[in-house]
Length: 439
Image (cartoon, rainbow, N blue to C red; front, side, top):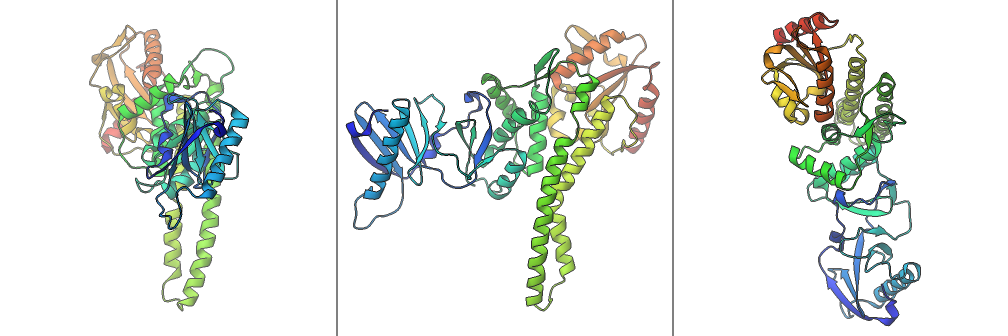
């Protein structure tokens, strides 16, 4: 960027959005940083490009100016002032500059392939980006496909994401927040967060925010690979110990639930007050109790989902600790094929995380040079995402343990092999009979 005072200036009025230059490719992440998003509508309006001795200024504007030339004197003055200030502060660091609708500095980058850096002043319009705040933003802007884009930052690096790509924002929240900060690892062997673990969390959060648009496993894997190329996949323990499992409690869900319930209570109180006033004005022509009941039902759906999620997490922790569970509700569902589980298909398209299912053993399990044949597996149950398999007595327990670790690492699902003479074998047989009877 050269001093604007020494350049020839070319002004252009354009109809296309200059913000389209800001991308949302997760492989372009430079490094992790604080997540924030722009809650207002002060989006980029001006794109400035420096070429040799030319300063090309493109202004997104469709307004008709009668009796005056474009750009107006005020536009020229504000834009020139911002560019002079940018040169004084950043010198020749940026070849491209973005200005917001008030012609103030918004972003800059050195070349076409460089990431956009935020150059503006932090204001109250920039809010912390987390699952709760994204829920609020999506409720307002994500209902329609053509809603406004989300402008957000990782540290100082700018991104722009259309509402149809909510998984990109949720994927960032999952890896930056849930996988990293809430499962700390201080020592011992670690491994990257698995694709299936990542994809399951993203799909779960998509369901909570109400994004019902279709998405394929291939799209999620591409997103995961983008994070991987950016070296932004966090690590978690290779082998989970009791102390690790205890970290996976429901406190995070408790915090979200409390925040949403507080909002719901405030909303219900406001709606109740408005309804009373309205009914008084209409001489109580409508039944207020019915309306209040309807409003309460609509605003409680997210809270109910989070309560169910909390119960689900607690059940998974209980099963992982191998403690008896007194609340294993049986559900009427057809068996799930073992081949489907091992292919990863069932992880994203079914409700296996919220119930118990019989598993149709239709394939061998062969991983890492270890194999267990179909004929050696007697009964299999997937219980709240935890796969339990009863095997023949002659199957070596040491190999079973090694195979379980490989399957968990590769497919992101916990597995336990049990022999007929081991504790828990009778329980699997009994539960299998009960599930089969209800199918």
